[in-house]
Amino acid sequence: MGAIVSVRVDMVVDTKDVRDALASVVAPAFALWPQQRNLQTGSSALKLAPSFHITTTIHNAPEDLHDAVLRTLEFLKMDKLGRLVVGRGSGDATVVSRARTLSSLTLSLSEGSEINSIATEVRKALEDRDEAYTLHVPADGSDATMTANTTLGLFRGLATFSQMWYTNDEDTYTINAPFSIQDSPVYPYRGLLLDTARNFFPVSDIKRMLDVMSWVKMSVLHWHVVDSQSFPLEIPGFINISRLGAYSPSSIYSTLDVEDIVHYAGARGIDVLMELDNPGHTTIIHKAFPEHVACPEATPWATYASEPPAGQLRFALPGTANFVADFLAAAARMSPSKYFSTGGDELNTACYDQDAPTQKQLNATGKTFSEALSDFITTTHGALVAQGKTPVVSEPLLNETLVKVWISSENVAAVVRKGFKVIHAASDYFYLDCGAGEWIGADPDANSWCDPFKSWQKSYSFDPTANLTDTEAALIQGGEHSLWGEQSGPENVDSITWPRAASSAELFWSGPGGNGSTALPRLHDVAYRMRTRGVKAIRVQPEWCALRPGKCDLTS
Image (cartoon, rainbow, N blue to C red; front, side):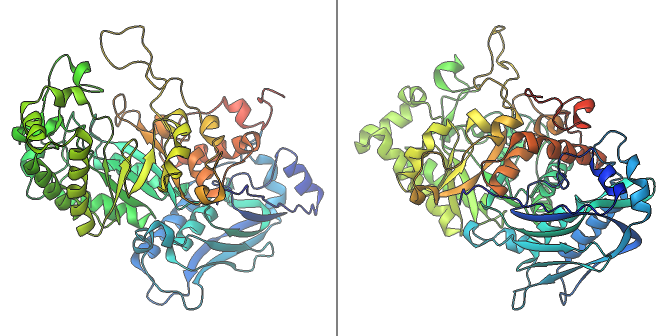
């Protein structure tokens, strides 16, 4: 894991027309994102037949694979993306008019492969997921073929296939045939964290995010559903928390909403990792269960919390531990994922120092703060394990679980050296909300705590295994971009996330060491394709630069 990926591109120029068409391109297959681990292309034009179709040799193919094929055909029909060169591919007309025509793509599973749905495959344990595929697109018009060991692998291959083609007039074509691809991810965890508690996101916006994630082969939606500000999740048996703790009755994810989101994600090759952060970040629970929350909405809030409102669970009380275990178990039953996150960061000791029930319990048992917290985690995580879940936590909380390292990339080495598996989420590389200015009021000159803005180039430059031994590097599971919601909502979710988050999608699929200068034209391409599909991805550069790869580099 973590090896630098080499990509082989073979160019054979057959005619003057092709040479002229290629003259305005830095490299031939730079539309593909994330970069394939083994890619060979040619220099022949090939266009799709009007009757182009995708077939499968799989007997009783799963419904979600069938639906993925239909979506791919729709993309091929509706994208209508012109090549990002001066003239937008108009100079390709002559060579395309003489091109061979591709009529079909055939999908197959390797002999002896088990036939499961895409959703079933992506919900397996991280180490058991198989996303590899091979894809061959001949230049002579004979059938294209795709083979994988799983339907999930075929789904990843369909994402690649849909990126190969451009449109000019009525032709959907490539000038880079043949294609020969062998591809698989370096890391199984390629995620995006979405915070829906600070500000509410309708289900339709979450689905759109899942669509985009699938196009760039992300595999995990880390859903930070609730926090101190609101509790928009309806949990069976605990509905009063959302009834009293959501912003409004319309700002609640019902059990049917959760089922819908989880199903939608699974069909797009994405596992939903739900997170109910505790024992911190839980103020809002006091609206329904005040007996379990210390210092609720205490002021000044900065004394008792990392952000307003103050309040956190009385973890030292056995009754609170049992209460939390019960509602975590109920929430865990809402998700088919093998993983469930309890967060666990940013506990404020001052809150507990002045909380009489907590101090009474600690004095009665003679336990320290850390000992009581350990007991709480044993109880609550035990409830998750009983539901078949692997708990996921955020540093500095460390135990036998999968750990998300977010405070700083410099903390990773210390975590893996204790033997813990790690998800990279370092705020100094992967926080999408940084650089927007301070959101706390009455502080006009302040910046956000994690300034500066984290560009796609910054996250793309990250090395997941820097300063780690081979043994330590094997504990890295992947990483994620994070969108914390203090200053984000449905109005800006597309532009603040895309295409920046695509940089980590490639980093954790293809491995580190990518060249930012050669990646930029491909990132332009994927962003333009996002916009053709209705996603308001932000511009990375002026269009003049996008049409002239390399001309806006500092060294040009």
